[in-house]
Image (cartoon, rainbow, N blue to C red; front, top):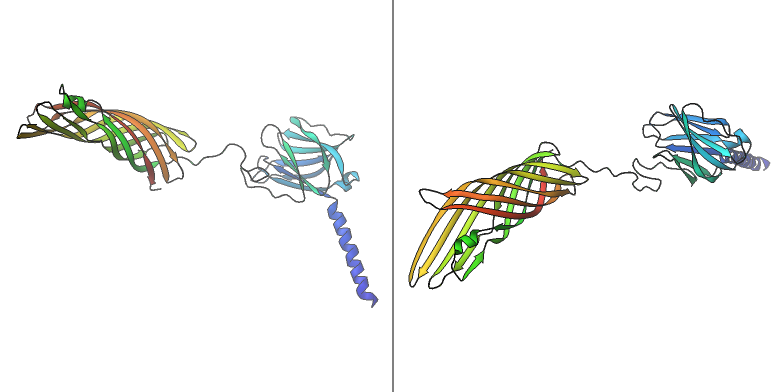
Length: 347
């Protein structure tokens, strides 16, 4: 009956001894060191651990403080030596001797007094100009790159590159043809109508780079109307279709691209007037077409690599002659404000 109890006692003694050995172990984790850089831990004036940073800039260096100085816990100051060929963490017990930094080394103190114990992992972050220290109870899991010790994003956010290649889009617009009502009404009083209102637009942009592109667009402006008369009545309408081709210059800012554009437009317009005097009604009309300039600017914001929204404003000169042998012509100004969505096509 004695032998089983003896085995249990021996196992208990072994486990306690192993736990005591583990309890005296200390771990230093260094983050954001240059990849493959040598890393060293110095306790007072003695080197107690060496290693090298991995590809993520992390080095984990365990050592036994009791074997080095005969103690399992100390109050200490912590320094970091930034040298050409090594990053050195120097832990100095209060009142203890400190090793010199060495040639071509920049020694920086991490402010504060730290209670160094085997139960804590010492995490030294070398990011930025001032190293920082975190005491973690128990083991430490290195966060993913680009995050701090809490898992939150650290440092400047890296945005997804803005789309290149073919982007198509469309949206609602507000258009205004400046002089069409005044030309149709002339000096007739009263005269009502207008050339401003909702319209729609569609287009495609090919971004050669993220800064330079070429855009083709189509706009269907609001129909211009005019109605009036004194002793007679008339109704006039002007329907136009506008196509544009422009060069585009963009400036990325995070997920947003500001852009300006300029080029040429081509329009086709149909004007019609119905005039009534007494019981007689006469209808006549004409069609115009021609080229003019256009320019504008706006911004687009990308929620993902495929989907974005945009808003822009633009101006165009609508000019041209009547088809056939007519003497009519158009020379007016088109203003437009457009908002909608854009979709990247292809890879």
